[in-house]
Length: 173
Image 1 (cartoon, rainbow, N blue to C red):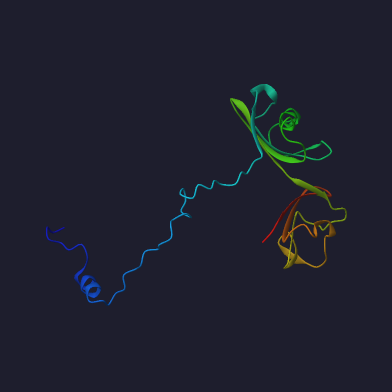
Image 2 (spheres, rainbow, N blue to C red; image 1 turned 60 degrees about the vertical axis):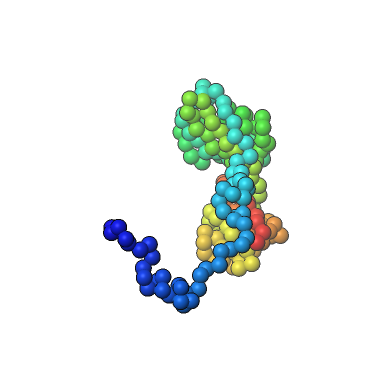
């Protein structure tokens, strides 16, 4: 790099000084939506985060769902019996909920409330989406309706937990 090098090319400098290039006007609004400036934290993903003694259960990790009737559905992990972990969660949060736990010296458990709906004779498949566009089962558009999911919101998603039991999430647009 030369000693007398220009910071801006000559053709850009002449165009700017001759009025051929508009200079961008800075946005007068404060940068409130910039990450880290607005002060709004991320929404909580879990309702409860807690710890438990390492010898509370065997294994190293588990993901489970506690149903309204008190039964547990273990979805993933190597814990043979998640009942002690569920009892620890239920001291803070009533069923139904979804939880995950991992042992790292002690058990760390996170749980969040869910809505469980029974849909007897529901559609075949594992995922339902109901919106103004219609009904989709496992991503495919189908005809018909699911009365148990209607009037819950603009977009209703349901995932099969076990047989006729579905975890439901409803949202507004």
